[in-house]
Amino acid sequence: MRAACTNLPVVLRPYEGELLYSWHARITALYRIPPGELFKFSASLWDLCVAPSTTVLPLLAEMTRLSSDAVQQLTISASGIAQAWWNIRQLTPDPLSPNMEYSYQPAVKFCRICLWHDSVSQGTEFLRTEWMLCVPTLCPIHAVPMEDHCELCGSFHFPTFVKTSRGFRLICADCSRPLAAPGFPCMSSVAPELRILQAFELALSRALNQRWSFQFPGAAAGPQFFLRTVEDLLWLLLIQPGEHFEYLFVHWLNRTLIPMPYRLYRYPRARPWLGDFSIKIRRGLVAHLAALVGGTTVRQQLSPHFLNRYSLGQALTALRPADAKEFRRRLASWPQMLKTLVFEPQSTH
Ligand SMILES: [Zn+2]
Ligand SMILES: [Zn+2]
Image 1 (cartoon, rainbow, N blue to C red):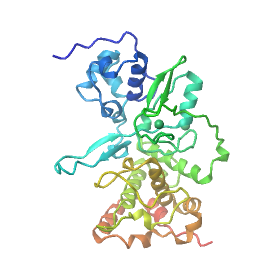
Image 2: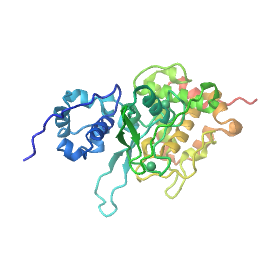
Image 3: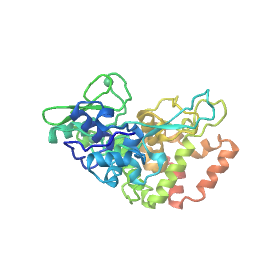
Protein backbone atom coordinates (compact mmCIF):
# COMPACT_ATOMS: atom_id res chain seq x y z
CA MET A 1 0.00 0.00 0.00
CA ARG A 2 1.25 3.47 -0.84
CA ALA A 3 2.39 5.51 2.11
CA ALA A 4 -0.09 8.25 2.89
CA CYS A 5 0.96 11.71 1.77
CA THR A 6 1.65 14.30 4.36
CA ASN A 7 1.79 18.00 3.83
CA LEU A 8 5.22 19.58 3.83
CA PRO A 9 5.83 21.73 6.92
CA VAL A 10 7.04 24.66 4.83
CA VAL A 11 5.94 25.19 1.25
CA LEU A 12 7.52 27.76 -1.01
CA ARG A 13 5.18 29.61 -3.30
CA PRO A 14 5.95 29.29 -7.01
CA TYR A 15 6.97 32.53 -8.71
CA GLU A 16 4.72 34.02 -11.37
CA GLY A 17 5.50 32.04 -14.52
CA GLU A 18 7.71 29.50 -12.75
CA LEU A 19 8.01 26.00 -14.23
CA LEU A 20 6.72 23.18 -12.03
CA TYR A 21 10.11 21.45 -12.31
CA SER A 22 11.83 24.57 -10.99
CA TRP A 23 9.50 24.92 -8.03
CA HIS A 24 9.72 21.19 -7.21
CA ALA A 25 13.53 21.34 -7.42
CA ARG A 26 13.64 24.38 -5.10
CA ILE A 27 11.52 22.56 -2.50
CA THR A 28 13.86 19.58 -2.80
CA ALA A 29 16.91 21.82 -2.32
CA LEU A 30 15.27 23.41 0.73
CA TYR A 31 14.82 20.10 2.52
CA ARG A 32 18.14 18.67 1.30
CA ILE A 33 16.78 15.14 0.96
CA PRO A 34 16.20 13.19 -2.27
CA PRO A 35 12.87 14.01 -3.96
CA GLY A 36 11.75 10.34 -3.70
CA GLU A 37 11.95 10.47 0.10
CA LEU A 38 10.54 13.96 0.40
CA PHE A 39 7.52 13.49 -1.84
CA LYS A 40 6.87 9.77 -1.22
CA PHE A 41 6.30 9.40 -4.96
CA SER A 42 8.40 10.02 -8.00
CA ALA A 43 7.57 12.56 -10.65
CA SER A 44 9.18 12.38 -14.10
CA LEU A 45 10.56 15.31 -16.08
CA TRP A 46 7.49 14.97 -18.27
CA ASP A 47 5.24 15.38 -15.19
CA LEU A 48 7.15 18.43 -14.03
CA CYS A 49 7.67 20.23 -17.33
CA VAL A 50 5.00 19.17 -19.78
CA ALA A 51 1.88 17.70 -18.12
CA PRO A 52 1.58 16.05 -14.70
CA SER A 53 0.06 12.56 -14.95
CA THR A 54 -3.31 11.90 -13.34
CA THR A 55 -1.49 9.91 -10.64
CA VAL A 56 1.08 12.56 -9.81
CA LEU A 57 -1.15 15.65 -10.06
CA PRO A 58 -3.36 15.05 -6.97
CA LEU A 59 -0.35 13.98 -4.89
CA LEU A 60 1.57 17.13 -5.79
CA ALA A 61 -1.48 19.27 -5.07
CA GLU A 62 -2.05 17.58 -1.71
CA MET A 63 1.53 17.98 -0.54
CA THR A 64 1.96 21.54 -1.67
CA ARG A 65 -1.52 22.76 -0.77
CA LEU A 66 -2.16 24.21 -4.22
CA SER A 67 -5.16 23.26 -6.35
CA SER A 68 -4.59 20.69 -9.11
CA ASP A 69 -5.42 23.42 -11.56
CA ALA A 70 -2.78 25.75 -10.17
CA VAL A 71 -0.16 22.97 -10.31
CA GLN A 72 -1.06 22.18 -13.92
CA GLN A 73 -0.75 25.84 -14.88
CA LEU A 74 2.97 25.58 -14.11
CA THR A 75 3.52 23.22 -17.07
CA ILE A 76 3.59 23.94 -20.78
CA SER A 77 0.55 21.84 -21.72
CA ALA A 78 -1.60 24.42 -19.90
CA SER A 79 -0.66 27.03 -22.53
CA GLY A 80 -2.80 25.29 -25.16
CA ILE A 81 0.07 25.63 -27.68
CA ALA A 82 0.57 22.65 -30.02
CA GLN A 83 3.07 19.97 -29.04
CA ALA A 84 5.21 20.62 -32.14
CA TRP A 85 6.27 23.90 -30.48
CA TRP A 86 7.23 22.44 -27.11
CA ASN A 87 10.83 22.19 -26.03
CA ILE A 88 10.86 18.39 -26.17
CA ARG A 89 12.89 15.94 -28.20
CA GLN A 90 11.85 12.71 -29.84
CA LEU A 91 14.03 9.81 -28.82
CA THR A 92 14.86 7.13 -31.35
CA PRO A 93 13.17 3.86 -30.41
CA ASP A 94 15.37 0.96 -29.40
CA PRO A 95 16.45 -0.72 -32.68
CA LEU A 96 16.01 -4.12 -31.00
CA SER A 97 12.33 -3.39 -30.33
CA PRO A 98 11.12 -1.97 -33.64
CA ASN A 99 7.53 -1.77 -32.47
CA MET A 100 8.40 0.49 -29.61
CA GLU A 101 6.89 3.93 -29.98
CA TYR A 102 8.83 7.16 -30.01
CA SER A 103 9.20 8.66 -26.59
CA TYR A 104 9.68 12.32 -25.83
CA GLN A 105 12.02 14.02 -23.46
CA PRO A 106 11.73 17.60 -22.20
CA ALA A 107 14.79 19.77 -22.86
CA VAL A 108 15.98 22.75 -20.84
CA LYS A 109 16.36 26.32 -22.10
CA PHE A 110 17.45 29.42 -20.18
CA CYS A 111 18.80 32.96 -20.43
CA ARG A 112 21.80 33.48 -18.18
CA ILE A 113 21.10 37.22 -17.82
CA CYS A 114 17.46 36.68 -16.77
CA LEU A 115 18.75 34.31 -14.09
CA TRP A 116 21.34 36.88 -13.00
CA HIS A 117 18.66 39.54 -12.70
CA ASP A 118 16.55 37.15 -10.59
CA SER A 119 19.47 36.62 -8.31
CA VAL A 120 20.22 40.33 -7.92
CA SER A 121 16.62 41.45 -7.51
CA GLN A 122 15.13 38.73 -5.32
CA GLY A 123 17.97 36.37 -4.39
CA THR A 124 16.30 33.43 -6.11
CA GLU A 125 16.70 32.22 -9.69
CA PHE A 126 14.02 30.13 -11.36
CA LEU A 127 13.17 28.49 -14.69
CA ARG A 128 10.19 29.91 -16.57
CA THR A 129 7.31 27.80 -17.90
CA GLU A 130 7.44 29.77 -21.17
CA TRP A 131 11.03 28.53 -21.65
CA MET A 132 9.45 25.12 -22.29
CA LEU A 133 8.57 26.34 -25.79
CA CYS A 134 11.16 25.67 -28.48
CA VAL A 135 11.06 29.34 -29.54
CA PRO A 136 12.32 31.96 -28.97
CA THR A 137 15.98 31.10 -29.36
CA LEU A 138 17.05 34.61 -28.31
CA CYS A 139 15.97 36.02 -24.96
CA PRO A 140 13.04 38.35 -25.73
CA ILE A 141 14.28 40.73 -23.02
CA HIS A 142 18.06 40.66 -23.45
CA ALA A 143 18.43 39.54 -27.11
CA VAL A 144 21.24 37.16 -26.11
CA PRO A 145 21.21 33.58 -27.40
CA MET A 146 19.32 31.33 -25.02
CA GLU A 147 21.22 28.23 -23.90
CA ASP A 148 20.36 24.55 -23.60
CA HIS A 149 23.44 23.08 -21.94
CA CYS A 150 26.21 23.81 -19.46
CA GLU A 151 28.96 25.84 -21.06
CA LEU A 152 31.64 24.27 -18.88
CA CYS A 153 30.96 20.52 -19.04
CA GLY A 154 28.50 20.32 -21.96
CA SER A 155 25.77 18.64 -19.89
CA PHE A 156 22.23 18.78 -21.29
CA HIS A 157 20.71 17.58 -18.00
CA PHE A 158 18.17 19.73 -16.22
CA PRO A 159 19.96 21.95 -13.70
CA THR A 160 19.47 21.64 -9.94
CA PHE A 161 19.28 24.25 -7.18
CA VAL A 162 21.42 25.04 -4.19
CA LYS A 163 20.08 26.95 -1.20
CA THR A 164 21.98 30.13 -0.43
CA SER A 165 21.58 32.63 2.41
CA ARG A 166 19.31 34.78 0.19
CA GLY A 167 17.43 32.15 -1.82
CA PHE A 168 18.25 29.61 -4.51
CA ARG A 169 20.82 29.42 -7.29
CA LEU A 170 20.60 27.22 -10.37
CA ILE A 171 23.65 25.06 -10.94
CA CYS A 172 24.66 22.46 -13.52
CA ALA A 173 23.55 19.01 -12.31
CA ASP A 174 26.89 17.53 -13.37
CA CYS A 175 29.65 20.05 -12.66
CA SER A 176 27.81 22.42 -10.26
CA ARG A 177 28.71 25.54 -12.23
CA PRO A 178 26.21 28.37 -11.63
CA LEU A 179 24.21 29.06 -14.80
CA ALA A 180 23.52 32.74 -14.19
CA ALA A 181 25.99 35.29 -15.49
CA PRO A 182 25.96 39.06 -15.66
CA GLY A 183 25.72 40.87 -18.94
CA PHE A 184 24.23 44.21 -19.75
CA PRO A 185 24.05 44.47 -23.50
CA CYS A 186 22.47 47.67 -24.65
CA MET A 187 19.99 47.19 -27.45
CA SER A 188 21.81 49.60 -29.73
CA SER A 189 24.88 47.32 -29.67
CA VAL A 190 22.94 44.20 -30.67
CA ALA A 191 23.82 43.08 -34.21
CA PRO A 192 21.09 44.05 -36.73
CA GLU A 193 20.49 40.42 -37.76
CA LEU A 194 19.84 39.48 -34.13
CA ARG A 195 17.39 42.34 -33.80
CA ILE A 196 15.51 41.10 -36.88
CA LEU A 197 15.48 37.58 -35.52
CA GLN A 198 14.24 38.84 -32.18
CA ALA A 199 11.38 40.71 -33.91
CA PHE A 200 10.44 37.58 -35.84
CA GLU A 201 10.51 35.42 -32.73
CA LEU A 202 8.38 37.93 -30.89
CA ALA A 203 5.80 37.88 -33.70
CA LEU A 204 5.93 34.07 -33.69
CA SER A 205 5.48 33.87 -29.91
CA ARG A 206 2.52 36.20 -30.13
CA ALA A 207 1.00 34.14 -32.95
CA LEU A 208 1.41 30.96 -30.87
CA ASN A 209 -0.65 32.71 -28.20
CA GLN A 210 -3.22 33.77 -30.82
CA ARG A 211 -2.21 37.39 -30.58
CA TRP A 212 -1.75 39.82 -33.44
CA SER A 213 1.52 41.50 -34.16
CA PHE A 214 2.40 44.31 -36.54
CA GLN A 215 6.12 44.52 -35.84
CA PHE A 216 7.23 41.96 -38.42
CA PRO A 217 6.27 41.76 -42.13
CA GLY A 218 3.64 39.09 -42.69
CA ALA A 219 2.53 38.90 -39.08
CA ALA A 220 -0.18 41.44 -39.85
CA ALA A 221 -1.96 38.68 -41.79
CA GLY A 222 -3.16 37.52 -38.37
CA PRO A 223 -1.92 34.89 -35.94
CA GLN A 224 -3.61 31.94 -37.64
CA PHE A 225 -2.37 32.65 -41.17
CA PHE A 226 1.08 33.73 -40.02
CA LEU A 227 1.55 30.60 -37.93
CA ARG A 228 0.22 28.37 -40.67
CA THR A 229 2.67 29.83 -43.19
CA VAL A 230 5.59 29.50 -40.77
CA GLU A 231 4.64 25.89 -40.07
CA ASP A 232 4.40 25.10 -43.79
CA LEU A 233 7.78 26.73 -44.42
CA LEU A 234 9.33 24.78 -41.55
CA TRP A 235 7.92 21.61 -43.07
CA LEU A 236 9.56 22.62 -46.35
CA LEU A 237 12.97 23.42 -44.79
CA LEU A 238 13.15 20.00 -43.17
CA ILE A 239 12.33 17.92 -46.23
CA GLN A 240 14.95 15.36 -47.07
CA PRO A 241 15.16 15.53 -50.86
CA GLY A 242 16.31 11.94 -51.44
CA GLU A 243 16.54 8.63 -49.59
CA HIS A 244 20.27 8.81 -49.08
CA PHE A 245 20.65 12.54 -49.20
CA GLU A 246 22.33 13.86 -46.13
CA TYR A 247 21.22 17.48 -46.42
CA LEU A 248 17.80 19.00 -46.07
CA PHE A 249 15.91 21.49 -48.24
CA VAL A 250 17.17 24.34 -46.06
CA HIS A 251 20.66 23.74 -47.48
CA TRP A 252 19.48 24.74 -50.94
CA LEU A 253 18.78 28.23 -49.70
CA ASN A 254 21.36 30.93 -49.23
CA ARG A 255 22.93 31.07 -45.83
CA THR A 256 21.85 33.73 -43.39
CA LEU A 257 24.14 35.64 -41.04
CA ILE A 258 23.07 33.32 -38.22
CA PRO A 259 25.49 30.40 -38.42
CA MET A 260 24.08 26.92 -38.83
CA PRO A 261 26.10 23.74 -39.39
CA TYR A 262 25.68 21.79 -42.62
CA ARG A 263 24.99 18.53 -40.87
CA LEU A 264 21.90 18.85 -38.74
CA TYR A 265 22.44 16.18 -36.15
CA ARG A 266 19.33 14.94 -34.46
CA TYR A 267 18.38 11.79 -32.66
CA PRO A 268 15.24 10.42 -34.25
CA ARG A 269 14.69 9.09 -37.73
CA ALA A 270 11.15 10.39 -37.85
CA ARG A 271 10.42 13.77 -39.43
CA PRO A 272 12.00 16.23 -37.00
CA TRP A 273 10.44 19.23 -35.35
CA LEU A 274 12.27 22.25 -33.99
CA GLY A 275 12.58 20.83 -30.46
CA ASP A 276 14.65 17.92 -31.81
CA PHE A 277 17.52 20.19 -32.70
CA SER A 278 20.05 21.81 -30.42
CA ILE A 279 19.23 25.45 -29.79
CA LYS A 280 22.07 26.60 -32.06
CA ILE A 281 20.70 24.68 -35.05
CA ARG A 282 17.20 25.81 -34.15
CA ARG A 283 18.32 29.45 -34.22
CA GLY A 284 19.70 28.91 -37.73
CA LEU A 285 16.43 27.34 -38.88
CA VAL A 286 14.38 30.12 -37.34
CA ALA A 287 16.57 32.69 -39.14
CA HIS A 288 15.73 30.95 -42.43
CA LEU A 289 12.04 31.08 -41.59
CA ALA A 290 12.36 34.81 -40.87
CA ALA A 291 14.24 35.37 -44.15
CA LEU A 292 11.54 33.53 -46.10
CA VAL A 293 8.47 35.01 -44.51
CA GLY A 294 9.85 38.52 -43.99
CA GLY A 295 10.06 39.52 -47.65
CA THR A 296 12.84 41.34 -49.47
CA THR A 297 13.67 43.89 -46.78
CA VAL A 298 14.24 41.26 -44.12
CA ARG A 299 16.13 39.00 -46.55
CA GLN A 300 18.45 41.90 -47.36
CA GLN A 301 19.30 42.17 -43.68
CA LEU A 302 19.57 38.46 -42.93
CA SER A 303 21.35 37.29 -46.08
CA PRO A 304 23.03 40.45 -47.46
CA HIS A 305 25.97 38.68 -49.10
CA PHE A 306 23.75 36.23 -50.91
CA LEU A 307 20.83 38.41 -51.87
CA ASN A 308 21.30 38.10 -55.60
CA ARG A 309 21.21 34.34 -55.42
CA TYR A 310 18.26 33.98 -53.08
CA SER A 311 15.63 32.16 -55.03
CA LEU A 312 13.06 30.00 -53.36
CA GLY A 313 11.30 29.32 -56.65
CA GLN A 314 14.44 27.78 -58.11
CA ALA A 315 15.12 25.70 -55.02
CA LEU A 316 11.60 24.28 -55.18
CA THR A 317 12.42 22.54 -58.45
CA ALA A 318 14.73 20.23 -56.50
CA LEU A 319 11.84 18.71 -54.54
CA ARG A 320 10.57 15.23 -55.22
CA PRO A 321 7.26 15.40 -57.15
CA ALA A 322 5.17 14.22 -54.18
CA ASP A 323 6.69 16.85 -51.90
CA ALA A 324 6.30 19.59 -54.53
CA LYS A 325 2.62 18.62 -54.86
CA GLU A 326 2.13 18.72 -51.12
CA PHE A 327 3.80 22.13 -50.89
CA ARG A 328 1.54 23.50 -53.63
CA ARG A 329 -1.47 22.15 -51.73
CA ARG A 330 -0.38 23.96 -48.57
CA LEU A 331 0.47 27.13 -50.49
CA ALA A 332 -3.08 27.33 -51.83
CA SER A 333 -4.43 28.27 -48.40
CA TRP A 334 -1.97 31.11 -47.75
CA PRO A 335 -3.28 34.66 -48.04
CA GLN A 336 -1.94 36.60 -51.00
CA MET A 337 0.00 38.96 -48.74
CA LEU A 338 2.14 36.11 -47.39
CA LYS A 339 2.59 34.52 -50.83
CA THR A 340 3.88 37.85 -52.10
CA LEU A 341 6.31 38.28 -49.23
CA VAL A 342 7.73 34.79 -49.59
CA PHE A 343 8.01 34.81 -53.38
CA GLU A 344 8.38 38.49 -54.17
CA PRO A 345 11.25 39.22 -56.52
CA GLN A 346 14.27 40.64 -54.82
CA SER A 347 15.34 44.14 -55.63
CA THR A 348 18.01 44.30 -58.28
CA HIS A 349 19.97 47.13 -56.82
ZN1 LIG B 1 17.12 37.29 -20.61
ZN1 LIG C 1 28.29 21.51 -16.16
